[in-house]
Image (tube, rainbow, N blue to C red; front, side, top):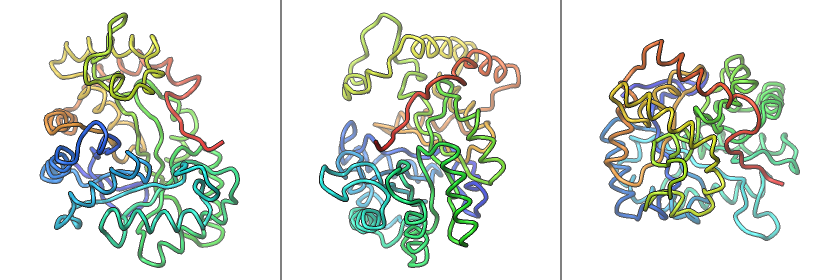
Length: 324
């Protein structure tokens, strides 16, 4: 396994991280625990979850999986997206974040998380309140590092400026949709992160499986695919994304690797990227994705991938999660 520093921090994370959105949904408890153990045994130390994944089941299962192995993991969770419909059940207020952190720690069976991330920018809470609450969590030893997710570049820069001015802990990372199907971060976010020493953690690195080659134009979604098990995902199956997946598949076949390995290896080579989180519903899928860490595409292939995905640098992102 290869390891990289998370942004400008001293924390070392595996180049490939484990996303756990499927735990408790498309992967049951037993399968999820096997995946976590296989990941750790393979050198993956970055395990990413959130308080809303599978209605908190993802965190609970990870807590079980890490019993006796907690120190082997760089464990990260998130809060901020809605947990209910009542008052104070969403956002980045001190009230909400402190309550959610305590519940996450109980489910994860740990007294600290290595990285605590704000799941989405909260336009209704002053950034000073959010950042001071996070700084207090760090001081209390319940959080080691803090990160953002789904922030626009200007929102992230404003947060960094406040933290620097007031001497508080600053965001060391940001999660954003980033893949061959979504290169919009390259316009503003990547230059900002390079300048400010913030690590990028791409989510949807395979565009929800579109870049793995499992979907074809004009064909039904395969049984067991995300488009079947999670009907809401069908909104992403636009023809231009599926066509991109087919083009990536042809390039991968020419090089004797899977489209997933090709797409992940391309992304790992991008500036400011610290770790690429990819989900799995079985150990075989994880084992295939692990090949991307050691496989290195040549300059000609990288140029070809940049060219065929250039149109996805502009327009709307593939995915973004925002509070209204």
